[in-house]
Length: 231
Image (cartoon, rainbow, N blue to C red; front, side, top):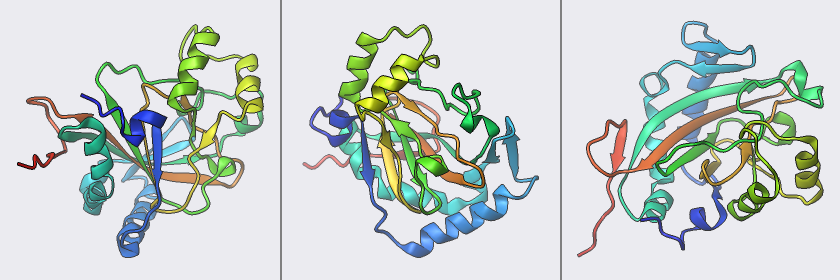
């Protein structure tokens, strides 16, 4: 069962500054750069996001990043966990960043993931100076999300009105996943409203995303991390 004292549970998300081996994250980001610009190694989605095909196979060092977040995730689940999926992609600009009502491109409308299982997402930023201009993910913490869902009627998780947008801006409820290469954000996408930001002209945001779940029994996984039971 979830550890309710864990930082991830209490806030819905946490940030870990990258303090590990700089050569590791540089190697990953350099390989990412080559692949994201190669049409045989990446695909373009909706004209505004390039995804690496099979990132773990193409950049095996990605697996080493798990060591940098596993303690927080083990603490949250109070149990072993497994990595279900890994994606690596670049969000690029689209003219609708200037529109009042942005076009749906890549989860850039407020939503929550509708998984029954308790999933966490772990983001590794892959370039420097990521901020709201360059496409930082926007997240509302767990407690505020709960209140907002009570107070605003959601016809669909991806549709929200102007009133909602004004309210969250005026009350400073938006947290931006800002930072530099290697910085980590772990968040619960079922408990926190979140949205991608469209980078402004000439900016982009590179990211590796791990999707992790508590390990129960017999599931397929990329990697399983066992909790150490101290006797």
